[in-house]
Each structure stands twice: as C-alpha cells, then as structure tokens.
Image (cartoon, rainbow, N blue to C red):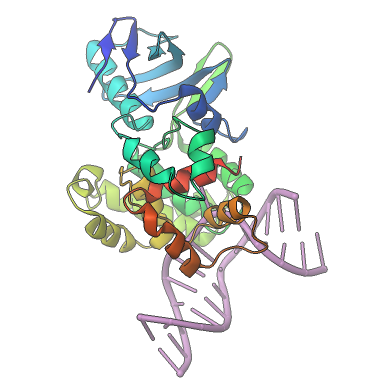
Length: 300
DNA sequence: ATCCAGGAACTGT
DNA sequence: ACAGTTCATGGA
C-alpha cells in the first residue's frame, strides 16, 4: 500500500483513474446519512482503529488524498489502520483501465464512464455493516431504509462529538448479538429484519462468519456461503461482495435501482427483464460491480 | 387510496 | 427447479 506518513496528517497518492470529487458526490447522495458528513469539499468520518476512535477529515490537495485528524493526533499504529481503511473505502487497489476499455465499447456504459470518470465503488470495509445495510434495504424505499439505519446507528453505535457535530460508528456485531428483537421492533424494524440482523450478529460473534475467511475463497464459494445465511438471498450476497469484499464480478442483477437506471439510459418504456439484462451484461464480465455502481450513480 | 420499494422465505406444484 | 404468496412498513 502506498501512503506517506506526515505524523500529523497522511498523504495517499491515488491510482490513475481516480476522481475525488466524483467519489464525494456519490457519498453525498443522501442527507439522511449518519456515518459520514461532507462539508466544503471534505469528508468527515469516524473510524474505529484497533486502539481508538479517530475522526478523519479527508480532502484533496496536491494530487493526493490528504487525511487530517481534527481531534487527536493518532498513534503510528492507528495511522496505519486509517491508511488501510481509506485504501479499502475508496477501492484504491482496483485498476480501472480494464473497465474503461470495456465500457467505451458499450452502449449503456460509455456515457456513464465519460461523465463520472474516476468514480470508484465506495466500499463498506465492515462486513457486519454491509450485511446489515443489505438487510435493512430489502424491499423498502431508500428513504425509509436510511431512516431505519439512522435510528439503528444512533441507538446502538458509538459516537464522538466535536465542534458541535456528532460523528457515528456503525454498531458492532458484538453489541447487536446481545440485544433482542423487541429492541429493533421499537425502531420499526419488521420482525423479519430484526431476526435477520441479530442472527447475522450472532453468527459473527460466534466466529462462524468472518471477512478474512471469506476473502480466501472465490466468487461461487463466497456467494454460496453468504446465501446460506438466513435473510441473505442472491441480491444481498452480491451487494455485500461488491461493496465490502471487493469482487468486481459481483452483480446484484435483481436490483430495482439497476433496472431503473438501465431503463433510463436506454429510454425504455418499461424496466428490462432479467433475461434482457443478462444479455446486455454479457460484455461486462468481470466488471459487473463497476457497471452496476456507475448505473446507480446515474440515478442521483 | 394505491402502488411500489436497492428482497427473501415459505409453500405448493 | 420453478411460480405464486406472504411478510410489513413508509414514501410518493
């Protein structure tokens, strides 16, 4: 990993095909988001390192990502953790040239990669967060999904307040493994969502589900493992593989947002069928996750 | 009111 | 394997 430690701040030289502004634009898609805040071109995010909570102010300067620490100058070990987190968060290890070469030949993707050049998948390094967000988002509109997430985070997550603003962390699986369904029903989770999320937390707390282990396996194996979890179907498995586990071939093909985006791009009267999407995506092989992400971007 | 939402499990065939 | 049904709740 490529980063420069300036003690009081970090400098992370990005790969080619990276546009910080485009990434921030995507992160700024909901005004109900509680896990980060964007102010004057900077991303503020609370990160949990192995040792402590670190508030990060992430900006762009001198052709690099710059990470400042408004509250406390973190230890060297924490700075390393932060650099690793940023690296995953912005998907900096992905070489997008293959995607762009493919996309320039594609009717649907070409205008998108032109418009959003340098946008990367904004990842969720925390597996429990990715699984929970997938479950929360199932079969409800996004506005309500954000409402549920906000209630969940503000009820069970840790936070730090600085300069009049409160910054939140997603709740840990350890914490959620210890609550009961009633605690989530109060927040207007359905019984099913409550059951699923607590179930996932319990599996993780018992060590039956672990990101490091998943990363050692291939697409088919991981998808099968994830789908064996109650509450995780095909859509959620691909969503998590795309947003958390770095599988660029992950493809949540049943996604309503994806359908709407394709309809919009092609000027269709109706949403495409799964079979039609499979045909269109034939050329996307290996890059389905990025194709999906750019299509989502087009809906903002 | 009515339809639908970044689905998944369950049931019957 | 496949199709239909149920779950649950708020947004537009």
